[in-house]
Amino acid sequence: MAEFSEALFSIFFIETLLNGLLLGGILALLSLGLNLIFGVIDVVWICYAEIIMVGMYLIFWLNTDLGLHIIPSMFLGILFTGFVGWLTHKLVISKLINAAPINQLIATGGLLFFFQGAAMIVFGIEFRNMGISLGSLALSEDIYLSWTRLLSFAISGIIVIILYVFLSKSYLGAAIRAISQDREIMTLMGVDTKKLYLMTSAIGGGLAGLAGCLLVLQYDVHPFIGLSFGPITFIICVMGGLGNMVGGFLAAFIFSELITIGGYFAEIEWGYVLAFVFFIAMMFLKPEGLFTRKS
Amino acid sequence: MLRISKLNAGYGSFQALFNIDIEVNFGEAVAVIGPNGAGKTTLMRAVSGLIPVKSGSVDMEGVDLINTPSHDIVKLGIAHVPEHRRLFPRMSVEDNMKMGSFSPQFREKYAERLEFVYNLFPRMKERRNQLAGTMSGGEQQMCAIGRALMSDPKILLMDEPSAGLAPVIVQQVFELIDKIKSDGLTVLIVEQNVKQVLKVVDRAYILEAGSLRMQGSSKKLLGSKEVQKAYLGM
Image (cartoon, rainbow over all chains, first blue to last red; front, side):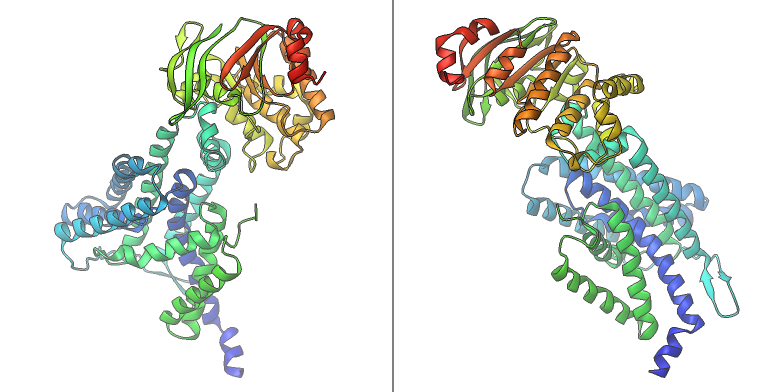
């Protein structure tokens, strides 16, 4: 017990909490795009993390193989994934918009394998690393925070604020909030729902690309990288209440803190175990999502 | 102004409307009355393009509505207050109003229209930051009418505005419709509350089982033995 309380008040525990916060920032960004798409179109993109992977590869390819500077590479990466999001809706989802949810799930699940396979054919299965290191920030003698993580956190924060202002102030944002509440009546408001769906898919894809920009600085790229983030992103969205962006945002931080705290007291794998056990328990206790009001 | 002719419409293989001919002239208030299931809501939905039309035509000031994409119909000056109000319940009153002026051409007049609607419904101004779904039925109906008026329509379609409201509120809603009408707005309203609606509108059509049974001025219909017996319980 003495060991435990010592560990709890240790300086390294503070570092752990801070790292959890930083990880939460990027998980929050990941969940935003998926939630946005679900909230508007009512379809879960199982392949969302694979679009992130596509973005990471593109940035890697432009930067490392073509020698383009990292900033324009990232910019092009975001544009391209936005286009991929647009195409995903145009070619696949729009054909299934009135189909049973299971068919839509299977179709986006199929896209997951399509993106994985395409990445394997084009880039092979090697792990690729951009080899960019921004170093760490020393808060004190004992606390180090990686600059990449800090940067990711800051950018995630900025994007969340931009998205919040966009959703609460603009006409398009109001339409995005409204459409999940009453789909049919949007037509009477003069909203072309097909156009709104395409636009949302492009924004969602672009957000995936942005997440790719931040992830490519921290992780190796390989065709299965999506699997490291896809399930977590999905679980965070469900935990916050699918389609509930504020809920997903908060859930991301709960989830990341559980992972890092579990990793602090045992190995990092136990952190994931802790987080998933929490998720399963929550599914029994509050299946509609932690932050969803009962309607 | 709005002319519906030989309209046939329905859902899938089920036909709900047969050869409907209705005309609404500028400045007029017209009602379509009839029992539950007569096809009144289907009629409104067909005009607004929410359901496909089998045959016939709907014409608004020379523009054929049947071949107009449904999200463009509001831009022609037709605003639809749907059955059961259909507000966005988890959005504020003001955000609901904002959705009413979504089309780019209405946005520049947003502030002006909002003031107009708030003048008409001071209660909505008091409640402007409240979530629409948390208001009373009568207030929600005001909000739904206000939202439709945000686009400065030429004609207002109202689908059972009195449904589900307490009698005293129903009275207020009809007073309101009377006011909107006397302000010069053209109104097409479908209602089950025959007695009340006939006091407000100029003319009415009676719809039964998808076909028009009778039509005439409100005065004539109120005086008709058949209407009195079937709808007014006399």
